[in-house]
Image (tube, rainbow, N blue to C red; front, side, top):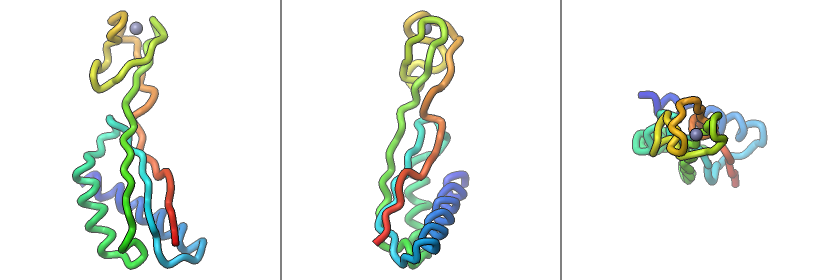
Length: 114
Ligand SMILES: [Zn+2]
């Protein structure tokens, strides 16, 4: 499962940070997930909850899951539009010379510790 490996990476980062700062409890983790990053929220939450129960450090940790809208840019008319609604073709001029400007990435935005 793709989501589980991402969650494991998050846990790794959290552990590393906790060690560096000598903390024993993580209060919350905020992640930003692009709409077209391929991460399924439901699976991610399941994996996260599963992992946190196995981890003393993150036992009471809250997860803030922020979805980042997928936005594309059209090189012909210089407009941006919602990728998930219109896919590869620009809804304004119907050009296909478009590219994704946001919504592809996964990142850890913030880790709060007690
Ligand atoms: Zn266009």
